[in-house]
Length: 408
Image (tube, one colour):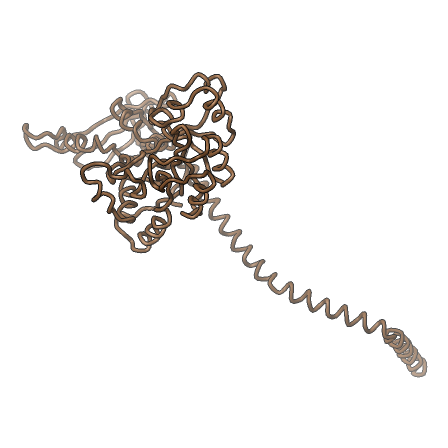
């Protein structure tokens, strides 16, 4: 892994491929349905998607080919390739025309989806959005759980959604089902049914594009820690050095920017020079007397953001986490140093472990030899040779004693 600390994963829980009969609906549907498996994956990679649940209407036909295409893209080194985790799934239409997502682990295949569709008695054409299982919503949810998958009611606040279609006992049975603990929403603040509120439920809310079109993937994420894309042009324009009054740049060659900062009862100032393109930190040691001070500006003097920057950052959760990591209270840099020390210590212990393991490789051989010696000794003792040996040793000692007496 190439990151440390908190991280957001951009996960599309609901999308479609040409395996769904309504994929690419419109004047160019036939052309859209000719998209290759690799191009379909690359569309999501270009949008910065990390995880993807493949959830066609009552079909898992594209799951195996997508897995194969993903492996080929990784080995080919395509310039737009980025790691992407595929989660096999399916969008099942159940009695009452309710849509339920079934999402499984990355090891599942098209065959597993076919088995699930058979278990819920789906007998219509695979891929049809109008096809319907012969089972109720509760029966389908139970079967998804038995198959090792997650059951997620799809777009609950829209057409064919649980909250817009169901009521009374049917809704109550689904709400009471312990296999459901998440729902897909399209409105970030959907109005929940009163029954949902009365039962004090707090299902996790997930988002999916429900994309039926090659260009229907979500917008690209903004990686935290940089200037938001929407502000880059404006920043570049005004941070230029102007040569005359007609230029848009706000700087001149001799521009110096000084920022005052109060911290822990002390006063500091940070000065940046356009001519030298460098900064210096100074601390007021006595009234009116400034002395040079060391350190990193971002670490020592964190600043808040303008309303416009906050608005842009709020669109991208990863950027907000970067702000948290940079905060002095989190002290992420010191944590990184400590982490590096622990990693080095761990690697050293691993090296010692390998040495011990190498020394223990002969253990089984030596134990085997010892067992052979013990068996030989047992045979030797049972044959009476031990008594003869003791008598022989006794006579030897007596003989040595006589010889010693004779010499004296």
